[in-house]
Length: 103
Image (cartoon, rainbow, N blue to C red; front, side, top):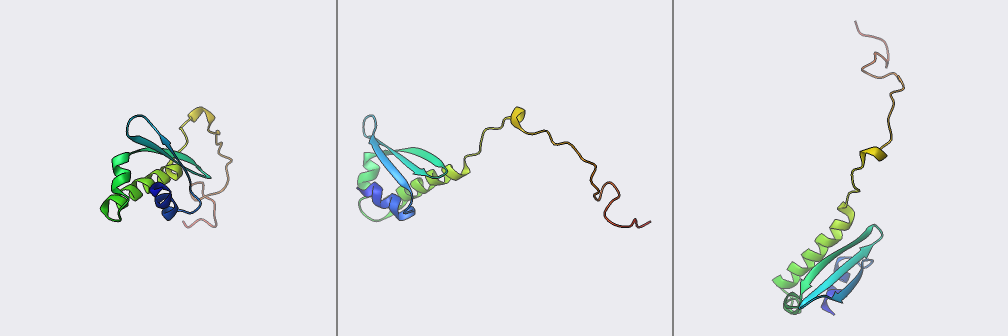
């Protein structure tokens, strides 16, 4: 299948799965160690990508963006789970530490 060749050309270790969705859509799921991302591809896009050219590169770039979403996915911000950082009074530039004073 053309989708397998496009995914493999991006990254050989990238796992993929194409499932038929409603109508003329195909749901492409790419997986890597960091997680997974899904995207919908129309059958017309797949048919246009069978020949090398702009359409194949457009589909390849969409798959690359889906792969990038795996790594760029940031965890949800949960302030109640962040550790409370207490100052310990260590010497630093603002507390007059780090060497002799220059007065």
